[in-house]
Amino acid sequence: MALVPKHIKNLLPYKAGKPISDVKRQLGLKNIVKLASNENPLGPSLMAINAVKEILLETHRYPDSNGYDLRTKLAKKFDLNIDNVIIGGGSEGIMSVIMRTFLSSKDEIIATKNSFIGFRVLANASGIKTNWVSMKNYYYDLESMAKKINDNTKVIYLANPDNPTGTYFNKNSFDNFMDKVPSRVIVILDEAYFEYASHIDDYPDSMHYRYDNVITLRTFSKIHGLAGFRVGYGFANNNLIGNLMKVKLPFEPSTLGQVAACASLKDEKHLISSIQINNSEKIKLEFFFKENNMKYIPSITNFLTLEFNSSNKAEKFCDNLLKKGIILRNLSSFGLPECVRVTIGLPNENKSLINCIKELDI
Ligand SMILES: Cc1ncc(COP(=O)(O)O)c(C=O)c1O
Image (cartoon, rainbow, N blue to C red; front, top):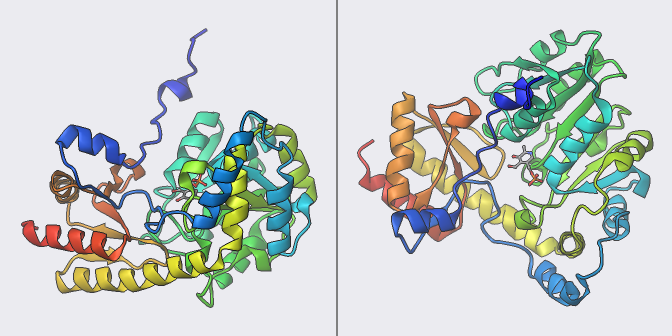
């Protein structure tokens, strides 16, 4: 018997955006602008940082394995009970718990090609048969996904808004889709960017729905600026959450993560300024791209994805900007080699990006 199963041997691992320290070391550059991982360029709320400082001397203790404070605060904020809430090591950590809890060998998954790479890696690593559905012009094709449902389908993964395209499916499409999903099928509704999208009228914020087979996933990694703390959360009916809680690693997230997240929830000002700066900077970047005939996908998130005529052009664009200290995300590992994702940064970071692009021959 082979030591390593075939699906692990063939697994393409998650390739994250380049860390700033790597680029500094490799290129000998001092100033780096990282616009590669959809992080909040404003950083974390100071309330979160102060709360973490206060708890540092308590970190010889294990975290609260029940996550009582954070789960209670999330339940209150979204008008639910604590039994409807799970927290974990990033929303990806919770995705992994969902896979381990509900899938067994004969089950099947339905997911979208070229959507969030983290889910693709988890699905491929699970060894579970996954039916990959193509996007339609960078949008989720829910009709085709529904047609793939069969007797073995157990989990469907949807990212709304999507990463890396920044597009979304609307209420109408979601309602039509859910009409076709049997109640024995679990839908993971990944809303990592919902705060950026929630002002849009026809965005189907899942908290306005009560489906017993939908698990909503959200995160403190994006607008809350706490990606390094690894805290995600999920909402679902108490039966699903109860089973997830049995399987989840008991001490995730860390004490620091839980404390930071609790404090961050109180900082409404930080949330509002993060949305405002994102919206105003997005307009500036869109304007520049339009002026320079650079094709981008309309996005309701904190990033914009550029589409080039060829993968060669996209790769060159990224490489040349990297040499100037700007880290963007080439999307070849997402299966979109002709695309490059740009996270919207602070005004001075976006200005540097624009100035560097002006120096390129594209
Ligand atoms: C759609 C989507 N879901 C989930 C995640 C992962 O979030 P977390 O840091 O909470 O694991 C990301 C991160 O890029 C994402 O884009």
